[in-house]
Image (cartoon, rainbow, N blue to C red; front, side, top):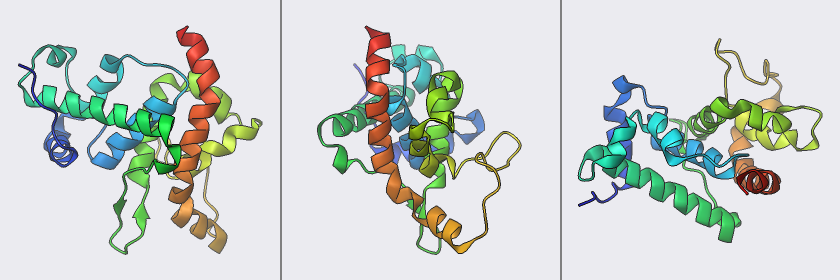
Length: 196
């Protein structure tokens, strides 16, 4: 008999207990951002191809119901379906999962890192939105502003220390829901043309 899906709270604890296995997701915001990129991105991806790295599990875990790994797979798949349904039927209700910083500000960075982690294996498919000449490039700004390259440098280059930049960084999270929905709309004709 298949195991019931974990709750999201249980899934976050389970992920934190697996840090030594190096899952992409070590927290619920990272998982949520990663899955949002899978849902809204340019290509359809097999669940095996995104769930295995996300949770640091072997593909064989899909074959063994009744295990914690299978319950985590089920929770991730359910969360994927929930994001997909929200973006398809009521996109204005889409809300990324963020934790707060000690000062009370929203900490969007983990969510954004999860989104970017899902982009990386298929970065060539994302290339049109990464091209600064593309008018839609700005859709990625509220996400990539929080990300770093492999050397730990800001992905979009050094940030300006001006007051406006600090304010943009503090409030960029509020632009993420609309940006994700706009990306989903942008990719939809391409994604489904490829799938067909």
